[in-house]
Amino acid sequence: MYGDKGAERLAARDREAAAAAFREITEDSDIEPEVRIEAAERLARFDERAAAQALRELAGDSGVGPELRLDAAERLALVDRRLAASAFHTIAGDSGAGSRIRAEAAGLLTGLDEGLAAQAFHGIADDPGADSSLRIEAAELLMALDRRLAASAFHTIAGDSDMDPRIRADAAEVLTGLDERLAALVFHTIADACDVEPRIRVEAAEVLAGLDERLAAEVFRGIADDVDIDADLRIEAADGIVGLDRQSAAEAFGSIADDAGVDPVSRLEAASMMHDLTERPGGEAFGAGWAGSRRPPSMRVQRPVSPMRPGRPPRPMRQPVPR
Image (cartoon, rainbow, N blue to C red; front, side, top):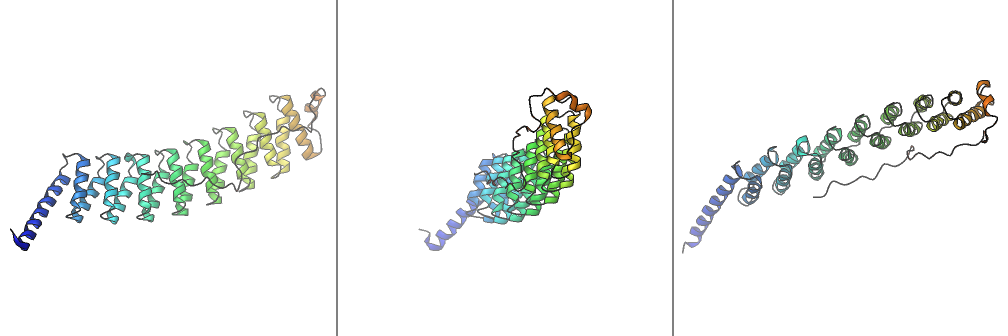
């Protein structure tokens, strides 16, 4: 009826009308975001540039729900990878989007721009307001992208006094494979902190001994001399000094042996250890009271082996949360 040219003109008018309709929907802020995203995706059939711009604006709009913003960015990746990378980076850096969405955005960004992905993961790992497990996950994933930034991230996490001490110790342990100097400083901070659980302090000092013997001897001595710490841990700390500084270890055992607030069995053990190191008894004031002890001085308390040791491989890296 219309002929070939007429049909082409009609189809062109129809395409223009459809594009205009979809474009109008994408630009109307009174329309629900999910409808605008759907309209933008359909607009791409007629005008990819306009569709990409619409999706980019939706992905960057903090007034749109985080899930929908991520959805817009994923659809944008099918139209314009450069703009999609920018959108994922924006979402990953927005603390208001929530830790999980930020981590997903950073993971999706990895396939588009590794440099921007590294920045995004570093931002999450460094954010004290982000979920602690996701901060660790971000730092682990960062290791495959930029080891320098990964070391910085683990150093920040390990040095965050508001985080669980065990998470800090885990972060410091991974850091040993990236930067031993920074790891030593962090383990020293943890082991020397009076507000950290004594068991964790001892474990941190044990790892520190493989990185910096001088610092390890100092913190072991501080733990061993601390009268507010359980006697078993004080003895364990003193034992940790033996291979680092025998004189200091003997003094630490002597301090425990002479402490009237320590239970008799532990005092006897400390005295025995001091004797082994110095080849002399624990001291006149101490020695007179143990004639009736049923426990030979050579008997040592069997102590649990610390799960943290130098050279222990880091935990396997986890992948980003699947969509």
